[in-house]
Image (cartoon, rainbow over all chains, first blue to last red; front, side, top):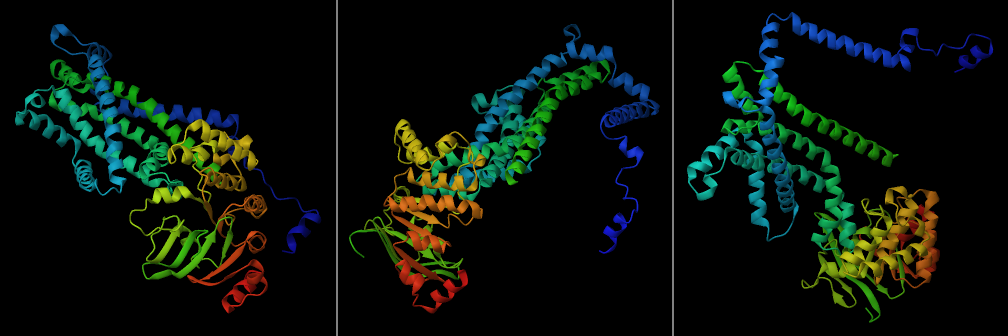
Length: 298
Length: 245
């Protein structure tokens, strides 16, 4: 306590506050150079690691053969090969259709679960059992049960649908359970004070839900809903097990006819083209949300 | 109980589990009356207010609004609450609505009055509280004092018969307390009927027609401000006033 000031005033050199030279390099323009160099180094390392594996040349031939990738993408009707590219359109319409239905059903189910209405009690129990059930069963099993079970039941038009339709039904029942839980978390996250204020104004339970709780809940659940949407897009590939001609199945046909797996690579790339932008967007949304919340706290 | 009573508490009892929060409280509020509830935290002030607008159900006694018992099972709580404006300690403005929409949501969706009428009334109210320029801002852009003034305006927009105010300055920066208390004084001068739970003794002395002291769920003493503050009769009141001074 007595020494610090005395030392400075008595001509002793001030303490060094500068970072050592090598660390100063990593600030400003140095940081850009450093990050580019390290990125290149990592990519080069990974690629060469791949090249020095014993099976590298075979894998390159079976999975990354450009000519096969091109043929798989375009298809070859003469040889009975479906186009992976065209088949991917099936994935797209399936996931869009399912997502719309899932969003509506999920919200309805969540609404039922958080409502306190006495009339809805039996429905509430049913919905709870439903979400427990379908959150717990692996989606592939749901696809088998729906895809092979519904046709076997022999109940009119329900038993005479295409595999893609059964796939969609499976995706919808599974994802509705997930999405209902996401919505429910959002609905219950709205602070109790909001509900008190709304009810104090004389708003009915339903008006409170519609005007006050729901708009606030939807805002908080958009990022997790987008995450589920990304999963749904990927899980459309599982419908291939029922024999629907979507991208994965088309690639399977190509692989078993031509003994080359490059079709799978193409299918994977197509999925990435769809999911990566959405993933980036979701992340951005989440960090914007976090910043906003931090700004509110300060 | 007299015929000019708007709100009467008659021997009201309320427990949360084993915790008896209100032990037989009786209190009347007449038209154009301002009654301040004082007492330490946990004395039951907030619970009493919440019973009045049926956010809590009472275990014993009765509450009447315009002479009608609120314990009558045929009473619709939503209709009761439309007669009573409530302002909270933590404002509880709706963050997803603009200031103007915060004011119109009740009159429009609860009272089902046309939006144009409700909007022009809301703007008049904002002019009255000096915040008409913030009509289209969201609540998080406002200071705490401004938010609480908007919350008061939101309650007034329902044209309620009385206002319940639950420690409305307790969550505010000391520098922002004044603007809210000034607004309440103006309302009192204009004849607004108010039941105010407060820790602001100076304010209670200035605006209250009557002051009621609650201690551990019992209404120990009530009277005019000068009776309570200058000449408290009960030892518990004397002790409380000594400590807050």
